[in-house]
View 1 (spheres, each protein chain N blue to C red):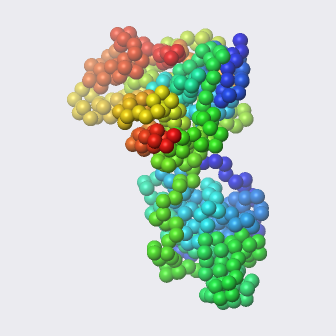
View 2 (spheres, rainbow over the protein chains, first blue to last red; view 1 turned 45 degrees about the horizontal axis):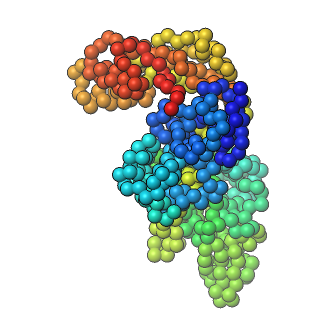
View 3 (spheres, helix red, strand yellow; view 1 turned 90 degrees about the vertical axis):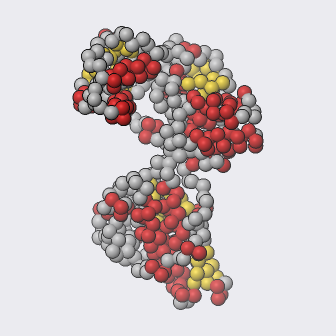
Length: 151
Length: 359
């Protein structure tokens, strides 16, 4: 049975098996490869997207849970990298290898939506869902503080 | 990052300008050599000055980057070094990944192999790239001097432009590229011909890493993002802890997965497990063995599938047998690590490879 939902504002329909992870649908079917596969177990945050405006591990979300809901990926955050978090990410030169950064950004956007002016501790706690093997954490914190200031 | 320019294998003799004599990674090449002929020449509208530099009529300067960009900034820093001595307008520089031609693009720090490691790229390529940039600048100057009929020593450059101050004439690099006559061998550049650090316009300046914007909007392409027609997907379901090996798995259930091509057990490995430190090993050895084991443990079940619209979920059915023998602390640690990883009581000798699928 096909599941109808929205990705980045577009109405889509997908007839993949009910238990198929959203991550695979996003990457393989819709070719939105900005969302990354990391651990496949909800441990690293590389696959973070928004579902109805709230962050979610796309590797831990089954297609069957999506009917009628709206998914936003890194590609849907802005059409021209103009989201305040993306701008802050560039200003602070956050990414190194960059593999985890789509997920980091999606988590950061989620935080600022809920709490426009988080404390440093709140940032660190919220971003604990996302791992960066390059160790860009200090820059991630600075970028979120900058986005909170400049948004 | 991004896609390489299409390869153009038709290259005329006069388009080749070899590197400076004495540099092991840019030997004087036979003009017709297959290696050089394979170097990219873009869409054919650009003039290739050397295996490193092409200039288009609109002034766009394409520079090869010979190192692999892994987030360390090589694709920006290496071309910037060349652009410095070329006196290129950085805003008009386009960087392309160099094709695998070690005779031209190899890393001097690794005997000319195209190998990016050990923080060597900037150090090892620094002098050669400066010379390659200076060579192309010299060729541009020589061409402008011939065009204007003036001595070359009356000319100077500003970023992207050759200037004859006496007569207030200017020719952009793009304009020169359109008529440039390129020598078969590179002009000689002596150390004193290179810029003094005080004359640097680019080196030492904080410039935006070229690939960075692609890493905040999802457009950066990683190897996992490359999809080619007809590709199949393979996955090895490995035991999450060292010392585990494939136990039983429900073949029928695996076979029933849609799109499945083939499954097989991969018994590659207890090689690592056999090297597990014994009970008298140090804590450091044990913890090293444990972490390596988690990353590398081989035994598993290979599932190959076609990429298709109906994507099979990973097999929630593979079961791994954890060794019950042995009482080394490493094994106990492995057991507790497994417990944490999969949130399952470790009293059972088996554990599922996919712990949960709902959020």
